[in-house]
Amino acid sequence: MFDVLMKIFGNKSEKKSGQIAKERLQVVLIHDRASVSPEIMEQLKNDIIAVISKYMDVNKSGMEISLANDADSVALVANIPVHSLHHSRR
Amino acid sequence: MCEIITITSGKGGVGKTTTTANIGVGLAMRGNRVALIDTDTGLRNLDLLLGLENRIMYDLVDVTSGRVPYKKALVRHKRFDSLYLLPTSQIRDKSAVNPEQLVQLCNEMKSDFEFIIIDCPAGIEQGFKTAIAAADCAIVVTMPEIAAVRDADKIIGELGRADKENIKLIVNRIRAQMVEKGDMLDMADINEILSIECIGQVPDDEFVVTSTNKGEPAITMKDSLAGQAYKNIVGRICGESIPFLKPPKEGFFTRLKRLFGML
Ligand SMILES: Nc1ncnc2c1ncn2[C@@H]1O[C@H](COP(=O)(O)OP(=O)(O)O)[C@@H](O)[C@H]1O
Ligand SMILES: [Mg+2]
Image: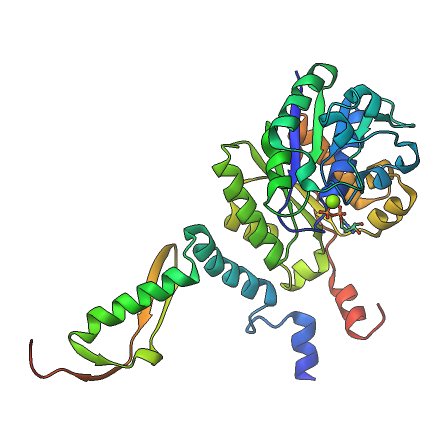
């Protein structure tokens, strides 16, 4: 019965598919407009790994980078799992 | 003065040809001399939507290759006699007409018409480049669906690269009930994402199908909601400021009935 009432009065808590479409579009268009190809993202990823590996032991296969938009700005988000910090400096 | 308008979209099947036929008829109903050029070479459709398929003698490729003057290839509409169609070839492909040829043709035709409306093929390859080459204005048609909006964005980018600054948007096949439930991108979303001037919001309408069946665009049918939306678009193209149609709102009882399977 509660379900039925929720349906009649409109359930506000669950995200609607129109809103999901909008958010997915906003992200995909950042890529499209910047015309960042998957190859370039892959190169960027490898370069970032190379730089960071100088200082830390990172999990290369676990790394993810992506473009994301929060509010009205675009960010390059990198998630780089670290195994351990290098003790000695080079 | 002649205005050359290209109807484009990127994605196929969103309603470019339907839009071209309706705007063409609408402008002619207002007394303008209008030429419609079908550039979807190999996939000829505009003739069918206008009910002119049995009267074609020559086509666009015959004209651009110099075999016949364009006036010989134009097909005049039976009912709206200031409306003409320049059909394209059904047997050639998109590479049969290049951008320079279409620009030259439009320059020749300009003095005879108030409007030249060009129906563009899907895609961003040569057919698209040819179709936009002569345009003073590009109308991008999209649908409230994620892939169609993405392709519209891509086309807007391509138009910018081709130095086309006058770009307008038409959103076709809006389903008010889905929008109301939050299950379809709404106009605010699409305007925010694409941020170009919107000149039309066309509902999804069975009249479009029945009118296509008969070869008489929906704009000629007074009960068609899509037809009314196309009339408003034509008014806006002519410089009038017309408010957008309010979608019929689904009330509480309709929602209740739908819930209990009565609709
Ligand atoms: N507003 C609408 N309501 C219902 N059906 C539509 C509407 N607009 C277009 N259609 C249908 O969608 C299909 C594709 O339209 P069409 O104009 O041929 O698209 P395009 O030229 O972009 O490929 C056709 O079957 C047409 O009847
Ligand atoms: Mg078409």
